[in-house]
Image: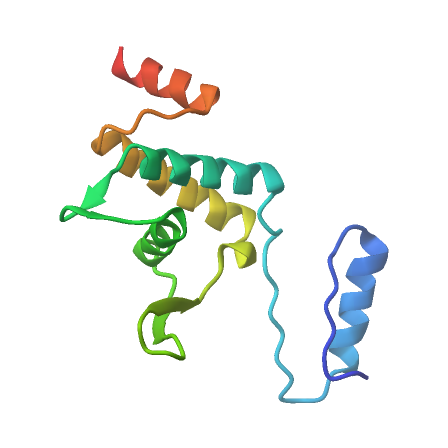
Length: 140
């Protein structure tokens, strides 16, 4: 038995492989089962929404942020841990920790809903036609 196995369950054969791995695992082994990863369309929508926020110069306490910074702010609001570390020259900081690439479909849906709700409360006009038409329906 290897120390590490990653199996994506696409069919019953893969499900059986997972069960075989568990049966052969040493006591004390850890098992982490996660839901399906976020989709590329979800990822595209998130970045589109974050770009709309940046382009419209939305702020928190009059401070502007990049799309990456907004992403971290929203991930933190969902309870995802983030650490802030200094750069080697000590002039800047960067975040590390939970990445949106690790999110499941459900987590990404929650993130998009949070961004959408925040945008609605803060007057964001969405460039995505589907979001814009949904927002228009909510206003009428």
